[in-house]
Image (tube, rainbow, N blue to C red; front, side, top):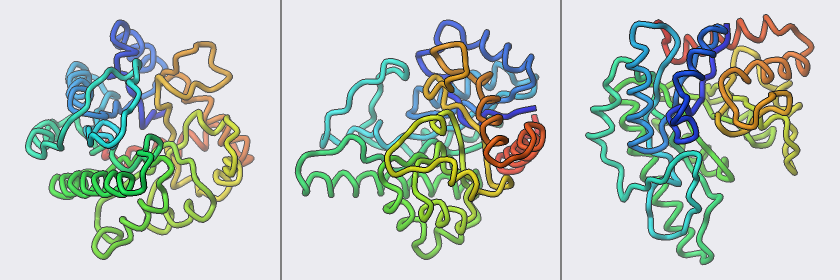
Length: 283
């Protein structure tokens, strides 16, 4: 059994065949958590999970991704795979109502993202402050509902670590995973010290300057690893399709097993246990 802890079958890329992809995954004993990036995709994730209410293996997470907050400070390219929808503010009560659904197992994906940034220092500072405030609001929701958090972080690890190490946040009882971790060894160790799980997906097959995925995987205990696809993105090179899907999570497991010089079954068993414990997956 495998659990894709970060999928996006709630995105426009799967508009025509999400059910087919889900059935194929479940038939191969692969569970999934569809993760929201704004209110419409969060709502869609819940709708999909509700559709499989009486069948094990399909769950949802809800949240507002930092680049989907319309700050007016930077122009962001529309992602056709996701579908365009930007929000002027985080509606706490609206997201709370959605997150109370029994199939919602986490708040996410939330965090910081400095990939799209303004050209002036002043506007960049304001962007960072706005994203920080959004993050703290969403962390408040996770704490109120006692739900784990799926963190997104791109080109912002030092800032995220600093925020989370503030008094009361690092030692809070909120469980968390840093999804699709792309960072250095020192940042990895800081996350592990704070009790984070580390999410690994198809990006580990890429070459990124300054990042050593193999060393990061060696440094991360299996008991702290979650597997994911981030589909429809980050398709492993071994997968026969251009669009990624939960079925391809097995290639991530294979690569982790190779790097750690262990068996596919051991990685599958431990990461499945990790996911079930973090997200309290029972049905």
